[in-house]
Amino acid sequence: MSFELDNLSPQTKAFLSRRATGTGLLVDGHWQTPAAGQTFAALDPATGMETGQIARADAADVDCAVAAARAALPKWKATVPAERARILWKIADLIEANIDELAEIETLDQGKPLFVGRWAEIPGAVGQFRFFAGQAMAIEGSTLESSINYQPQGKQVRSWTVREPVGVVAAIVPWNSPLVLTAMKLAPALAAGCTVVLKPAEDTSLSALRLAELMIEAGLPAGVLNVVTGLGAETGAALAAHPLVDKIAFTGSTATGRAVLDAAKTNFKRVTLELGGKSPSIVMPDADLTQAIPGVANAIFFNGGQVCIAGSRLYVHRSIHDSVVAGVAAYAKGLKLGHGLAPDTQMGPVVSARHAERVEGFLQRARAEGATMLTGGERFGDAGTFIQPTVVVDVNPGMEIVREEVFGPVLVVQAFDDAEEVIAAANSSEYGLAASVWTEGFSTAHRMSSDIKAGTVWINCHAMYDASLAIGGVKQSGWGRDSGKQALDNYLEWKTVCAVI
Ligand code: NAD
Image (cartoon, rainbow, N blue to C red; front, side, top):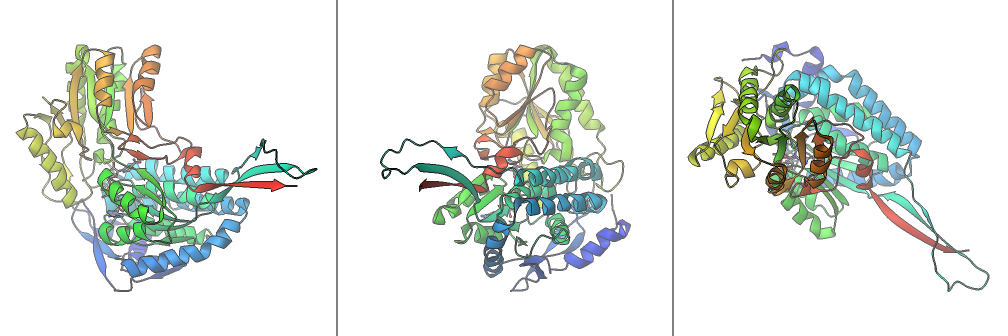
């Protein structure tokens, strides 16, 4: 299991010696150490080995970063859309040109198998910058026919709307898919003409620092992007409460989302929240099981279940229940766990020791409530933070393991008898992020996609994702959408202009 730092590519080693040394705060185009000189360790979750020291920004550092973003705003806002688009496109090109290094950094920091970053998430980040490069040049207002009838004699009223950037954005992101989730905030914010202070998650700061280097190389002016690494309760809280921040773009847990919302109240910051999920995968009796079985298994075990849209609740029609569950359990047992940098690894560790303990806590309490681990349910290996892919049966809707987001490789399975019953069960969650329905029936697919309360419903697939497709949730999964045209709206205000001419 051990993976020596010596095996890393020369590019990654050079990056670590440049940035993972406590000098990784980006303020007004300069890399600097935090004012109080504090740092914390970055760890490889597969080995527990330290990979560097990350700068720990406090409120004073956050103040400087926000001031830099504020100062850079007028010029960036006035930069013509074509120039903003050119820079965004160049960022995408540079990410693509450095994709192997970025994938290695992401694996080292987060634990994910190399292929997840290399073939899914980092191309996803490229897609975000290219999509929003286009959107930067398609921002439009409207002209309005008003019915105002008290204008002076001989005059006319003309009214129109324009879109303007919201201002300084605090982008706060989690650790599960760091680079692509960061891109989902930065690309639309910069396209809209906003400036940004980015706060990466404390467990996974590295890829944000490499991305910031590439963004400077792409020609992004000083102060337009600032990066403050640090702890949630310190750096994140100071940023969310800062009076000169106009908008918070947050992705993370529902609990932290509430704290962010409270902090935003002080100056009525605009807030978008991409929060947790407990998404159902539903296998109907007419499903093509050759697709559905690996599909629902991948929906939960991809990235070790550390995916907001993971299909963590599986509902299977009773007539096919046993064969589907046997197939999913066999898939889980067959997954090769290991260091994400090893080429044959299919599932890596969970992100940290703290998170592994959290997942184990869920499994222990589920057992105590009467659930059975059909496969998995234990730690794996003698180093790192690996959890076996786990399939949990003998559950009921009231159990914590069915209701709460575990955010690990843990699937709970329940049988159902008809569509009405399973729609009610799917909708019984307080979350509403995503769902998938596996069926060959055209009418079933349409009806269920309309009846399920979720931000996204997939038919015969799960977690299909593209920069053009909005993603986000209803209920306690959050407010607003990332990705797609809808995301640009998060970063724009409407201004109405009314003129007598
Ligand atoms: P988290 O809420 O613990 O942390 C998210 C970010 O918030 C981190 O950068 C953290 O440092 C910061 N933070 C913590 N406390 C803060 C505070 N008081 N004020 C401001 N910032 C603070 O979440 P996590 O454990 O890093 O990520 C996992 C969660 O993210 C899961 O619930 C998952 O479902 C969710 N998520 C949602 C989406 C989506 O699109 N809906 C995508 C990915 C992850």
